[in-house]
Length: 632
Image (cartoon, rainbow, N blue to C red; front, side, top):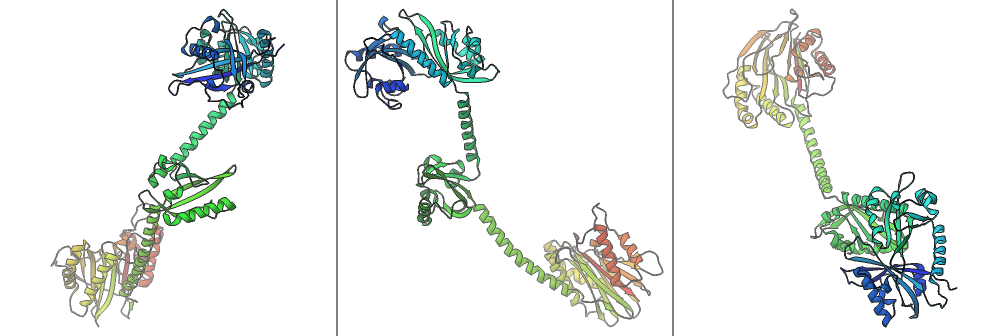
């Protein structure tokens, strides 16, 4: 008896396009039966395979009935006998069954053709179909596909052994159960319609619940078996487990989404080109940096969009050299180059291009970062470094000049000794001390503090010293000198918002008389060997630079042998430790008493050492100046 083999062909009609019924899919046996390769007929119109003449009208009528959903004529309920045309234009007599698949997509219809060879005279459809189905079941069992049959109400009447691999149930556990018992709750509701419609379904996604509770995804195909009277006899179908495939596809989609998000969220422009320098990808930062949209950039030559004209030939030669030799000195390195924007402006970029071989060709991924701001900052830093070097050089000059203006050495005689020390907060400061002979019998001593520190106060200190020294040959008293000095400096101090505190002393060597006047400066300390406490030398007087024509009070006292005078600026007493405590006047007074028998230089060193220990620091926020006069 002739061996009958059914062949499956799936057709698709999309009304929104050309409304031509085309072949969507066909079984390998159908392709071989028609003499075509497996994919050769995909997308071709169905009229390519049916014969002309009266059969063509029969085909078209049958297809129209199925497409339009009309009730077919009795002769078309289970199909019809007609001719089909092979690739070699041979006509074969076949039996054709048509079924419309349910589609969830509007304006789309899918139709399944079952084609059975009827050319042999000893054709027996029933026996041949039974034999064919048995072979199909054997092949499906070997392929791991689950074959099943259901009665008209959807209860399993047959199940292949593959159900145990897919759902974990034995065939006996499945038989007699309704198919919805094995579906997830969502699919239970959605798939009821297929059993009620008596319409075949193809490659339907079904969500089953495995015996152990996990979800299984299958691709399910089912055909209703209908007798000549149009009565549904049973359902026959097959399920293929696609859980792993869908998991892989979903993971791949998620991976691609993450990769896309990374590319788009990158701060750098990411550009991908092929071996012909054609751009294949172009992220959002690339749009912002270069001014070309993604749609405009893709398909264009890279060099024409972002490389300045003078460098394009070198780019082409470098790419050709790499493709020819596999070596390129500019690849896989971080480089600084010049790029060009859409408006033609050139700007600096930092970039790296890496090749990736795909088969016999390459793609190149580039990471490009606009470094205009960085280059501007680097230029500003270099300029600042130059200016800083100049400023430091000028400060060193100012420091040397300021140091040269202070007394170079103590004054020592058989009658007295005087010395001083200045510790500026910066390289130059606003503190000032001085001592000099006005004449053979008169010694002048001055200590001053210009508000603030650094260059501005230092300049006023120089001006103050010059004004004082200009009066050195006169006969002015401390009060008179301060009045002249205040009037001289007033205009400059008033304009600059600076002020000066200053204490002026004159010591008469002949009669040991000490005259002094104060312009708002901290009063010096006087320690006498006949007293256990220090006393302050003070006189009334405003700081310099507040008003003109200020009258300064002048006082006089007689110094005894061993008397010591400590002059200081407020940087000494107001120095703070980590707890916010001041060094304070009392601590200064105690140290002066403790070291009274030492030399002036030793007293200064003791004060500075204990100050550093108190503050736990070698530097201070304000200038510190000390001057000591000691009568022998």
